[in-house]
Length: 490
Image 1: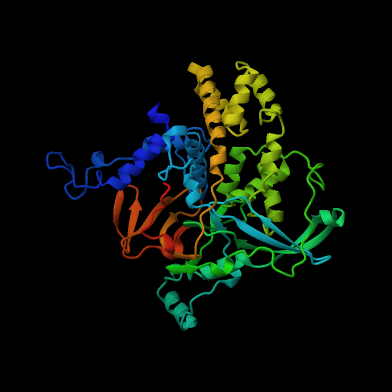
Image 2 (image 1 turned 30 degrees about the vertical axis):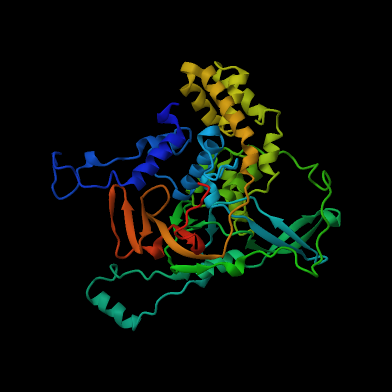
């Protein structure tokens, strides 16, 4: 095994370094320390190899530029899932079963949508694919601002002292409960096509609920919006997040007695047979849209609607549809992903393959097809992969095929039911962004350990007396009934 490029090896090394305590001790007395007031940098271990193996084949993450933490986390889980499913005998369940629990299983949850047709009041329930991050809009219409006593007198004093410009800006506050209410509220969908009405169009009301409550719930706050200059900017708002939350009232119940349901669609019927194949989503375009502050699911919907790669057209689509109730929902199973795989027997777009063969001029069709399939249809990433493996291209392709075979053979093992429990959670971590937009600034993490908050700021780790809970970009909650009891299968 090439350890430097093996994700599981690098992840294990990093996990051991973080949990073993071997790298958190004092600097040895025998070491020459240039600054006695702090630990010498040469005795700190930076996870550079882990960072490289995660981002080396990604158009954005392989650079040293500032990237979005939410996008990176989702990409990290996808990479870990692929590596774990293709590990074969390297990963075995502790309970001796054949099931393989991926890292994303700890965060995975599904949602249930309840749609009511306005024409005949029939009800349809839809279950979403598994997600790993709950993305919440911030309803600024529900924001409150603190009362300022005697504002006229305060302004007069600031003018007299010449410090009007230095007056501290009042930041509004939105409660976390209001954000959850916005996510779970009933909304109206216009121009929805209903197969049971002979594909006629009718509006509907819909609401979302949780199908299961994961062990860890990662919440992403949509703190960025597009400004008048079409650049992403941070929404200046405080989020009032309690230490304990209960989501039990947001648990889906499924069809209830007395409800009249929409008749189930017959296989191959309806509009599924005439639906056009969805385009391949360009990863570079996806990254550009997400840098503007939009969610991954919303960006995928926009790019799918405009052909897969046109950023400007996708941005216009976002402006027109950003208020759609399903804008942040994942693309349905059997939709874009299934249609993309149907574009050819090998699961790749043959148009992309032939275009690369003609433009590059030094690779065979089979080589290019393997690269495009490995890079999820992204032409630029496929070209980079081909050139970076020219020394032993046939060997690299053989390794890809071997990994794909191992992954396919282990696929049935992933059908493990999602973890569930009582929907009561405690706040145990947060990620904060310091800066005006996603393209610049600095990320800082806080974790709650033994009842105390600890800040992780690059190599600096210390107790935090006043963690920036109201300003966080991502929140990590742990289900209360799992505290102190690790998952037995890991």
